[in-house]
Length: 320
Image 1 (cartoon, rainbow, N blue to C red):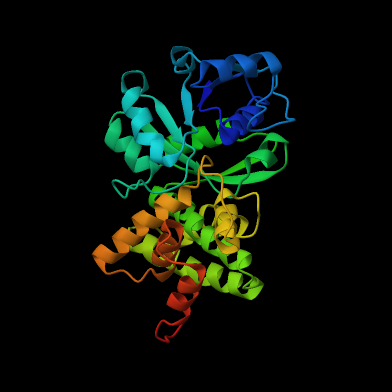
Image 2 (cartoon, rainbow, N blue to C red):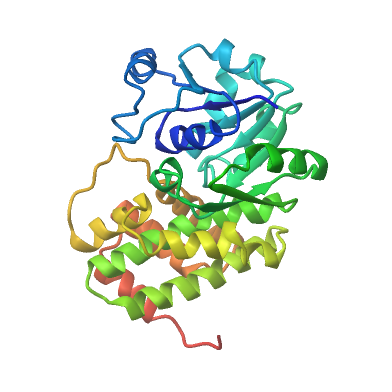
């Protein structure tokens, strides 16, 4: 299989760097100036400064060149995925499309595979998700991810093709569990960042991770996911990483809320939209999702950190 990565942000570039150790890779950058600069300097200076692009990566602004390959990795933000698919539906039809984003679409409540299936019905969709930072992958540090695909045969083929010297993939056919694990952990990371920023301590963070994980499992199982999927890389693994490191954009955003400091609004924070989507679903369906609802209100400015603490600690006592 030949591989292209569509999207030259940090994660897309990092994946291209890792995959280039197997075979030549095409990296598509939507911005022509960015593509030319990266091709000349052999560096993505704005997203991954100091990391050299291997010669096996062909950076191009020409989508027609990228879509010639067999497998297309979609490294675009979750909230932009549908628009990207619609814009290029004619050349993406019938292709193997591997979503590399995490979250729930605010307008529909759907995950990335569902959005691909709805937008391009004859595509062959899959999802790459799990605990990973772009900088780690780009620098060759060992990383394990989940590859989710309902087509078991295609999943095996993709697993072999996309596994690299530093990137180990585990496959699953439970796309719902993989989608939701990768999405909901971002919500919990915002809450954990806010708790640490507000000086609530590591015990509070541990409580949020634990009760947040219970919330993730409850919601995912109701949506048809297998419980064991949430115990894996795309659920618990990603949750632990994202809730404990300032390399996580969602955690940093929460930290800024807790510190009452401004945050760079040009930085993609998928957990904000996901929290809003989860809050809407919880309220409309009567689901008990207190952390998601609280994080949604905190992220939108409807709650202060003090309000959030009171909302969670003031809930009726219950069994674990």
